[in-house]
Image (cartoon, one colour):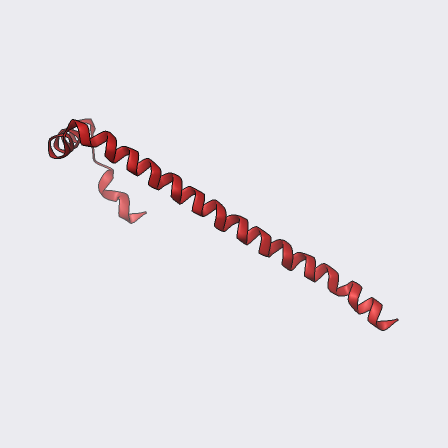
Length: 79
């Protein structure tokens, strides 16, 4: 957690100054557009993460299924 150490000493005054600078740089009309784009990006990222998680779960289930089927195959081969 060494990367966020610079955020420890930030106060309300600094946050207000940063917000005012952002407002001056982008203007009042651009900020909602930026936030909308940021929201879409976060939503897309979460969707991608859930798809990856589903794939991992499918592979895990397939592996468990194949491992549980192996003893049955060995028993039938021995007879």
